[in-house]
Image (tube, protein in one colour):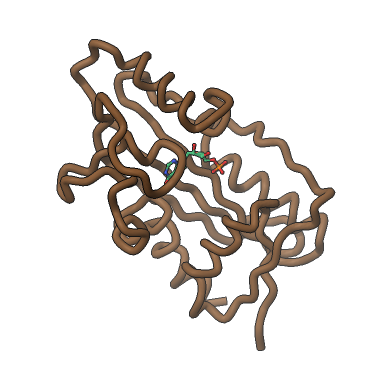
Length: 190
Ligand code: IMP
């Protein structure tokens, strides 16, 4: 029997991406109702993922899944962090802001973090998972794939930025890929 999992996002791209990660899980994924808007008021990725999963589960009476992710730069004390999506109006302005704030800084260490939470129909959190991918912030963008901060996030082991990687390679090492890999065995147990 297929089980229904409501994805706490209004973004069809995110639904598609989750469908790919959870393809063999036996769950059918669907978008949350459009009118249901949840503010990300938490101060950690995990808090925001739990908040969204819980509220969507309660509102729909179904199991719900939510993720929250972003970039943490060591020399900026973890900024932009949970404000990654809101750091400036567009992707290129967000990149420009990070590069400006790191101007003259030799420590370029950074990480992408992804937290995922799954809530049961009563709003209780059933599972959580987190994935981290370490890298370095370049001085200028490189590559034109991916989205967000991908062109400035360089992974030394692969000698590529996220924006230079195929979706398959990025998915195999990324924060999101690792979080879903950790979640899958738990989801299969239900
Ligand atoms: P979310 O949709 O609330 O999780 O926002 C995540 C934000 O963090 C995005 O808008 C991007 O700016 C950034 N981000 C998260 N994951 C990635 C990634 O894999 N590549 C580039 N930027 C990312």
